[in-house]
Image 1 (tube, helix red, strand yellow):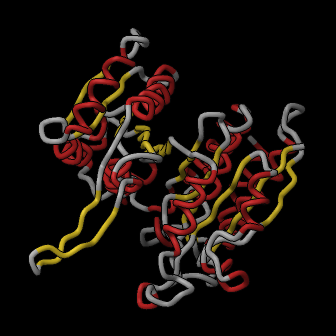
Image 2 (image 1 turned 180 degrees about the vertical axis):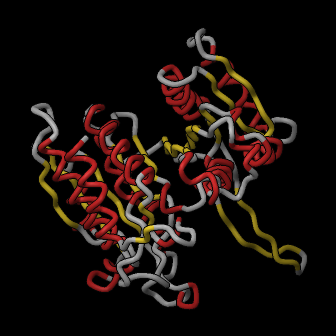
Length: 362
């Protein structure tokens, strides 16, 4: 028995989470090594604020503490209501609090362009013909997001200050995550920094180079982050594992997220040093389409695949989910966000029905 904390959240979160949990429960029939999954639901984000006046209430924290993994949906509300108490700092209070509470130091975001969907990628065909399959490894606990933040006045002028700080242990830990991931892939690591300007980046580059010596089979390349941003668009096929800081990772992973053509295809994992993880789609709560049954469930379903892989070592079941998604796309089924004229456009539940069909037949 494995206990999963299920935090659907806001917007389309509950809709796609319902479908992902259907897939998770179906995995119990995939083999003798797959355990039974007990799902315990908790409130997060605006949904939590309505009942507890907190975006990450104590009750939800306790549910997560007694779980073996966290399956997270999405949080946040309409932009026009961002100043209302229910939504003010909702994402920061939810996600940053979860990351801090469980010391999630590594965010893994796979970026893959499905050949069947090449036509919806914003890149020209010649830029993706070699295939795009990269893993972005983002450090989550250090850097400018967790440094000192302050506003002040001096000589009648308003100032803002945000401190970016890294220590060698934090950098070393995320570097090991990246190199270990690369050993299971194409054995190439690109480290993005701003070492020509920032001392924190010079330390980053120094420590990553030291860790590299422990992985002689893996090739390391250092790249300045501004060049890296350009290369993700200009030649994304060159990347295998890309490791970088908290802020740079936030920006680069969002840039890379547009390559497949929709955030509805992008899953991610956040892990701590002990292997405990939180799994979530990379997109937002999309309140404009919430409740309509048209959201793409694939990112949430692929988050289940990542959970099976990283938290429970169920590689076969994880691969079967990914393969079922691929075969569903190969069969021409689409949700609205990835559709073209004359495509077979399905709703959230119907798309999951097709994935479940492929999963059972695969």
